[in-house]
Image (cartoon, rainbow, N blue to C red; front, top):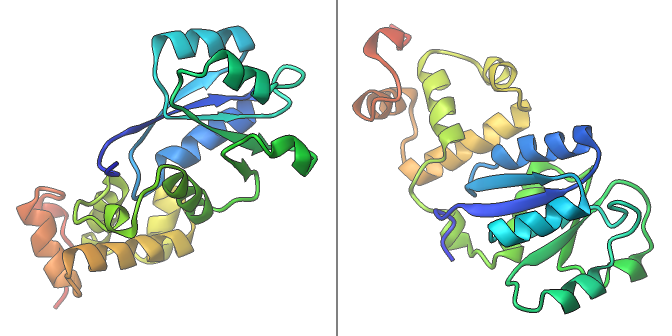
Length: 201
């Protein structure tokens, strides 16, 4: 499967803060295109499975009491879906054996991206494609407007470390090593207007 294709991820979690936070982080992943469906009840989960075909279900093992994954897999053997445990509190490792993977509240964006890529069997080639993500395009726009890494991080609500990682990925994908080169790329590809570019002498 190529990472250019959008992955549909269903998130089953009753806490609006945790659920919305996870959705926000998933949408910011740079190398994987993701759409999400939010689920707040077991009834909602059943409706989701009838109406959609998510490739991944991220679910809190304590969802509405306790999520019986063994029973779920037995009832839906026809589903081609990977199930990840969303760990918000301590859960005994033996209760996670039937999950395809897990994520927790302390995972970084890079770790989360690696876990999803691994679950979907993406290769390095899939993730190293030449196509820029929307976030990378936004960062190029900020760079050619003369913004520092710190200013970019504040504008896009990400860490400076994440900005640096994106810049490294942009350089690798485009093989452009200067701001002047990025400026030409941004103008030609209509990422910025000529009047927005910061000219340096």
